[in-house]
Amino acid sequence: MISSYIKSHYKQSILTLMFVGFLVDYLDRMVMSVAVIPIKEEFNLNATEIGFILSSFFFSYAIMQIPGGWLSDKLGSRKIILGSVVIWSLFTVFTGLAWSLLSLILIRILFGIGQGGYPSATQKGIADFFDFKERPKASAILMSSNYFGMALAPLLAAPLVVLLGWRNMFIVLGLLGIVMFYVYWRFYRLPHRPSKQSIATLHKVPLKDWVLNAEVWKITIMWFAAGIVNWGLASWLPSYLSEARGMNLLSSGFYAALPGITTGIMMLFNGWILEKFFIDREKYFAAVGMVLSAISLYLMFTSTSIVAAIVYMNLCMVFKSFAFTVAFSLPHKLMSKRIIGSAMGVINMGAQAAGFLSPIVMGVLITNFSYNAAFWFLIGSCLISVVAAIAIKKPSTVEATIQKDESPVY
Image 1 (spheres, rainbow, N blue to C red):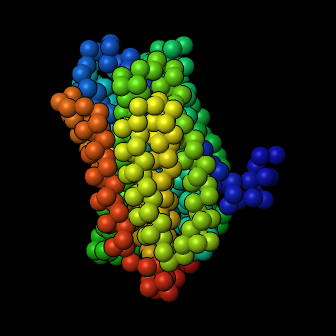
Image 2: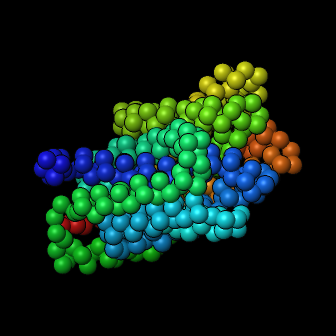
């Protein structure tokens, strides 16, 4: 029954499968932001050491983005997705077996290597299964999963830590990933067998087309600066709500999940908004979003009301999602299918480099100054993202070239 449904709704089924894969990806990744609370007590760690734990994943994850994207173009999305899922699931299990700060950091680095190929491989999958005009909207829908995963992490992690302990929680989540690997192996297959000529075309990934592409680097800078905000908040929000706002573990986990829920819902509409009102003006959608994100962030940490702070916290993440949507949908209008995996590898490297840098910098600022100093750091990053977004070229200037460049895959 499941197989027949997938065959009759193949594009939608593949998009759903990649969406669920991202939920598991983010769940395994982001539960650490809640788990560090009991880990801090067990290993007697300070905020700077916690920052290194949170950032260690992003160090290797960022490094793997470009190789992962290139391999997706070179070998195809299926092989990279399967390899990524099984590796990250095994190291999720190993996280629960960590015995010291150093072992935990090493395991998180290897975990990041496992997850590093997944984002670019799914974007390659979008290009494989969807027509040129369909890809931006499909990509926006797929990437909304990131925020739902970000929301699920604290919602599930807080009660699981209380019920199972942080070690058993990671073991259970790792086993869930192994199940996800089987589902991908069973159902994720290209709808047609490529011809020999098409396979030869697929193996050609011209370096200059993506390394020397100015738009790739503009989007990368925009998403790097926005990623500083994204990962800074995602990593430190539970601790901020617990330490600065006086919430208990379960409450901080619940409220830390709210931005993911509201932003995930918004992401489902962002693709439609871009198509309806921002065709060829996507960069302004991103720029306005980052300006509003900066304003909301300032209002969040200066508010004396917990309710108002939570509202502004949600608005900050919702507005930041404008840049997130543009970062993953606009490349499909500026780059051809042949190099989309590699290009997205570069762009996502920027975001994940931010994921490495942001928790460490915030940890140092919190240790030596205050949470407010850390939030000013995030506001500065918002403004950098605005400048980079405005510099991006309009898609209409390159669209005809892109469509001509695309060779049939099958």
